[in-house]
Amino acid sequence: MKKRLLLLMIMISLLLVSCRSAKELSVFQTPSWTDTVEGRANQVFFHGEGRGLDPYRALFARIEEAIGSELDRRYLGELIDTGRIEDLGLMITNQYRTGEEIVLQARASEELVDRLRTTLAKERQDRIDQIEELLRQANLAYKANDDTKTITRYLEAAMVASSGPVGEKRYEPEVLVAEAIRYIEPLEFFLTRSERSYARTTVILRRRTRLLAPRVLHASISATYEAYNALGALYEDTLYFNSHETGQLFFDPLNAAMKREGVITFFLDLEIPPLAQDLVLQVEEALKKVSIEFPYALSNALGPGSIGLSLEEYSISGDLLPSSYAKTAFSEGSKRDGIPILDVVLERAAESELE
Image 1 (tube, rainbow, N blue to C red):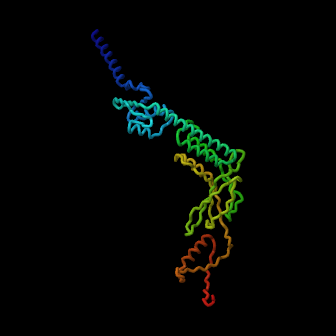
Image 2: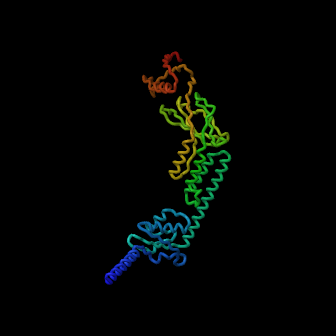
Image 3: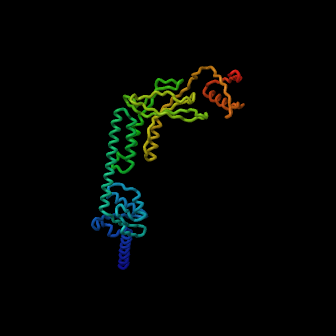
């Protein structure tokens, strides 16, 4: 009985030792040099660990943390491809692998790291100063009812923020574009003193608020409609206007070739600066909603009567031709515009009668 008990105790002890050994073996042991943060004079060390490319990413993240700013991603590519970052005097000096786990150690020039830190901090502050000045201008423009300038300044600030780190959430491109859209959404077009038979109207852009709807001054406004080109084909013509200090514009068609009946669309015309595509789409969607349509049907200025037409064709040498291509094209174009054409045959005078 005692022997059996002794044998059982020995087996339990061996089992406990085995479990502890397995646990110790499962723990990833990093080399002692990973605790090194300082080396020779004017040098600084960085470490990264993980699998695959993760050690490089971890090492790069620690470099960014030390510098206090995000770095250009080309530096990460350079580190992965060459094991170096020349602008920092950095190179990978130690590598330890156990199974799939990898530990990297890199050494960099402290002077170059400090220099880059100073440069990036100045660039970041310059961007912040530029953004704050644009937002100051945007605020003044809004108080002066120049909403489109306010929107433009916010979009310009977003473009500046897109050029590099800005440090603060409120200055990130997504936040600034959201603010620009917030100023677009209350804008609405109104038409007054319209004459549909002449395609004339007065266009006003207002800022819809709870109590007031002030006119928006100096707004860039475009008008699009269909017209015929010299070959009789339809195309979309666009005219550009500005509401100036009165906050309105008078539209009077300038293109005599515009369709006799159609729709004129007025919309807010703002130039979107170079931004990320998803941000540009957000602004475009908001601008599409700031538009208004004006249906028109031009009256016949010549009245209900017909116009007599006698049209003949000649060759380049001056000989009369039997064809009627020009007359047909002219008649069809006039009919399309609602102008009735009456074919008239004129007798040619004899040369003796002309002398």
